[in-house]
Length: 369
Ligand code: SF4
Ligand code: SF4
Image 1 (cartoon, rainbow, N blue to C red):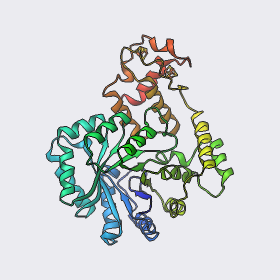
Image 2: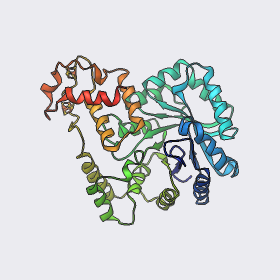
Image 3: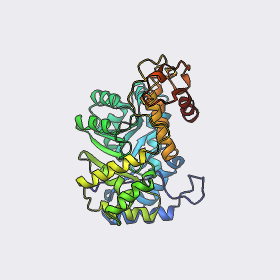
Image 4: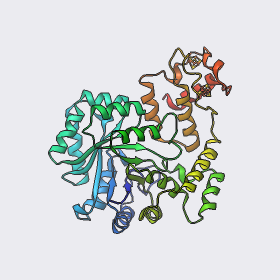
């Protein structure tokens, strides 16, 4: 199977601000081109386009192409489940919206500390196993937005999960909060294949700082900025599929041009990405080096560098909804930014002399909604 998945979460729309106004004609054209080129993997989700992504998938793919010519992935909205019976209700609704009798891949959507606890409470893993036994889901797994340590626990407790969908891109690879590299290494340790989401960080890595872009263009003027990000993810050995949320026809054409016969990054290209990452990170809002010196003495157990890292990400790349998930997951067993009592213990230890208390107020303003 070719390694580029068609993400159906950012489809073209006809009315600005109305996510349900999907431009179906254009989606059909994009889907046809993608399939014509031998690609087969589509990814949708219950909340995408307020429920209309699944419907668009039915219209563009299921009703216009033979079932065996594509695979379709959908996800159980774990965040909406409040009782065990909800699983079947959501699943039946998804089959109907998509117009299929089974999903090739079916994932628990967005596991993290809270959704994992809820999934255990409502017997979600038993439901997933049942789907697989019945042939309603050919393969099962979960998408994940939390720390590597919890991922290790989930995979240890649930070896029946076959896939993990992770946020991986070159900016988040060593990010303190997102822990892309660590999560990838945990999945690999458990011999689970990885599906990559957000390889272009919601489109942010299609338009990077000028100095970084210059590095890319100097090396190869014909290669798009986006292609560096997608190839970074696709070059990882244990990655089975890289999702790209495709929004227009030109994007499909560009993506397929270098993913048709994927050439992994060479050593020189990896070095260029490292340098580009440093340039992009140099424009950060809070110059935290994640040394952790401030953390131990905090009476409110606030994971200061993790929050700063999320905040910096948000400032650099705009609103990325997944960041709120990471923040909420972190607050499950740590203090929130707004819990700070202004004792200033942390500031005494900060070698960067960051005004931590003031910066936490900013973090709180963005994330404690
Ligand atoms: S000032 Fe706030 S963040 Fe710093 S140690 Fe005190 S409670 Fe923790
Ligand atoms: S001590 Fe300063 S630089 Fe180090 S992690 Fe804390 S805030 Fe960041």
